[in-house]
Image (cartoon, rainbow, N blue to C red; front, top):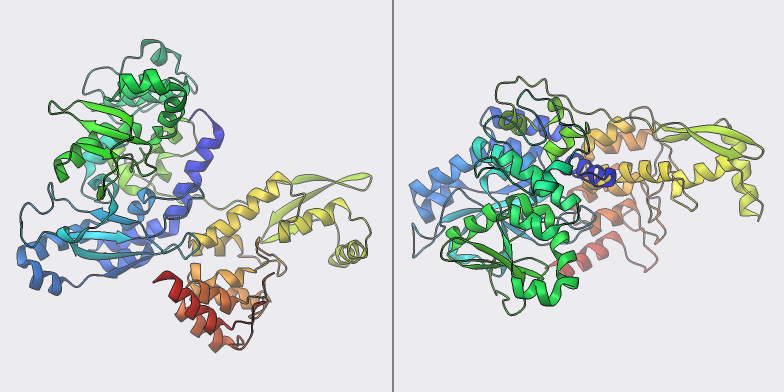
Length: 529
């Protein structure tokens, strides 16, 4: 976390995976025992009938599953689901949730009931997830298995440990709560001493310091894992960068590997990318080595749970205690009363743009790039540019904001990314807050689509009226000729298609391939089944 870019990525993950409004709504519903309402607030589609669970597994199993559902914090869970490099949910991944120590051991024949989450079919589908109950004996292939601190509201002690807290303090903080000086890692690196076995905060600090010093082998050892000596001697040039790439899981890796070994009764575990394996010896020692000859046909992945970064963000001032997820705050600051607040979306900072011989200030606000020029002046420059003329700096900035056309100033690129990322990750409230005072109807994503094309990713009942009022068209095509109705078909969002048609969208509009939205829907269904 010494690098600002790394901290920014974690902040984006927290904000996109579980936006503030989602956290508030899901927490409120869970607080009154409404687990279905909490799931709905967190974009989780539930397919759970407790009567069917009781009929198949028995009343005791149904009661246990219901207890887990009541404790389920789906907004917190979303932060730990497997994702791609672009932060999209990992397509088609299966994620197991359960408090059971060893699934299947209680009911060897029929198996135990497990809560299972399944992720979207592709990385460009709406970021909704599905929750159902399945038989522990029916798990096939590879899957992810999350510990209770990732999703169980009652797992307070486990969550405190996972987030890097000892009995008397949290990592990078003094017992009185004051953060350590930023960048002060030299002492921990020089000693390489993780402290006593129960000094969790010191261990997390030491592992992070060793990683920052580019000493991955020492970091793994401080985390309780040895590196295979032969592999290190023979393949160090390949192995060291791989170890560093898997380091986000390191602070919780040893405990997670032992948990999986006890849970599933297997001694060797492989990473999802197939490059590393962790072996659990009979005496409990852990050894990391290139996966090589061991490629399991089924079972959960190791390295599958990244360590939380919230405490490091606190230390660097990127998060305040009152901005923590309520369950995280409860675990880290048990004697403090949280005045929970959601970070407010800020307008972009003013930017200086060279426009002719002068420097002008421009600023993104209310879904528009405000300049010193009138709309008529900008339209005139766009017309001249279309005829082969030059375009002024302010007009070029407006074009970059609207379309992403290069050159795009860094600040505008970040603001565009944030706006469309909020839509992609389903942050309806964040999106509406950014657009509360209006929207540039000419704003386009990288495919040439308007925000109307993103209705399937957000609460369309709330967003559609705002977009219509702003003047966005129901049938405006993107660069491939696809209308918002086609975009809904690509997302398999039939309810959104119905709403668009009811609002006046043309069901007979065709894209560049001559397909109506109905034909595109049929094609996508064939591809994803």
